[in-house]
Length: 358
Image (cartoon, rainbow, N blue to C red; front, top):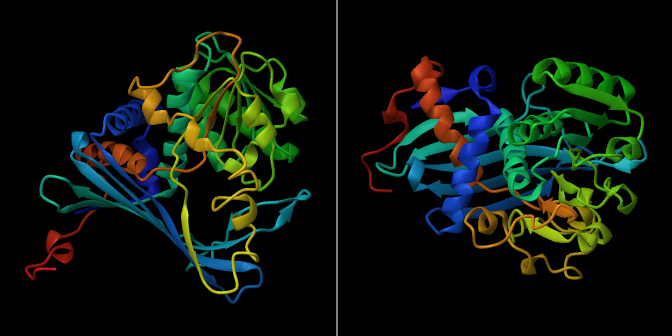
C-alpha cells in the first residue's frame, strides 16, 4: 500500500489529464457504469466558541479505472464574518496547525487498499477539473476571457481548468484583498503564459468575460444578476455563491448532482449552524427552486442531455455538491504516476487486510 503526500502529488499532477479522467468518469456515471455515494456529515459540538466538529465521508466506484475511493475529512469548522460577509472556514488545530483529510483508494478487482493520500491538492483539482468538464460542453467554443472572483486555493483550480479546455487570452481576477489579487495575477501570468490582470471590483472582472467563475468560501452570493451577460457561462465552487434569481435567469442550467448532502447533527441544531441556512447543508431557495428538473453533468457528458445550443445562451454549471467519484478518477492517475516515479511511502499490505472474516 502506498502513502502519498500533497507535496508529492503537486510535483507531478497536472490539470489537463485530470479533466480528461473526470470527463470519462462522468460519462461512465451517466451510462450507469460507475457509482457515486453521496456525501454525509456528522456534526457535533466543539469546545471552541462558534465552532463544530464535522466528520465527512463521500465515495465512488469507477470500474473502468479499476478503483474505488473513500474520502474522509475530520474538521473543526466555524463561520467568521470577513469583509462584511460570513465565510466557511476550517480551523487547522491538529498537531503543527494542520488539517485532516485523506482518500483511501481501493482496487475493484481484489478489494485491497492500493493507496492513501492527502485530499487537499486533489480537492481543488477535482472541483476545478469538474468545472472544466462542464465548460467544455457549456461555454462558447470561442471563449477567451475569464472573469474570476476569488484568489484562494479553489481559484487556482478554476483558472487551470478553464485554461485546459479553452484558449484563454485574458483572465481578470478580483479579490477583496488587493495584495492577494496582485500576487495571484503575477503567479498565473507566469505559469500559464497569458495575461492575468488584477481588477478592483467584481463588475470589472465580469465586464467582457465569456466565462465567469466564483471560487470563494462566501456564505452569501458573489455572482449577482448585473454581472451576467448574454452568451456568458457561469460557474461556482459553492452553491451559496449563485443566488436564486441568477439561476432562474439562465437559459441552460446544469447541476453537478441532484443528491443533497446528508447532515446528521447533534441536538439543539440546525438553527445554530449557518451551514444549515445557506451553505452545504441547505439554502433558502431549496424547495422554492427545484433543481431536480435540471440535468446533471453526467447526463450532458453521456449525451443524454444537451449542452450549449447557441452563442447567446447564458449557461450555468451549478456545482451544488461534490462527488466521491471524482476522487476515484484522479486517484487512479495518482497511483499510477506515483508508482512509475517511485514516490510515496510503501507500507506492508498486511497492516490493512486480515485473515478474519469481517
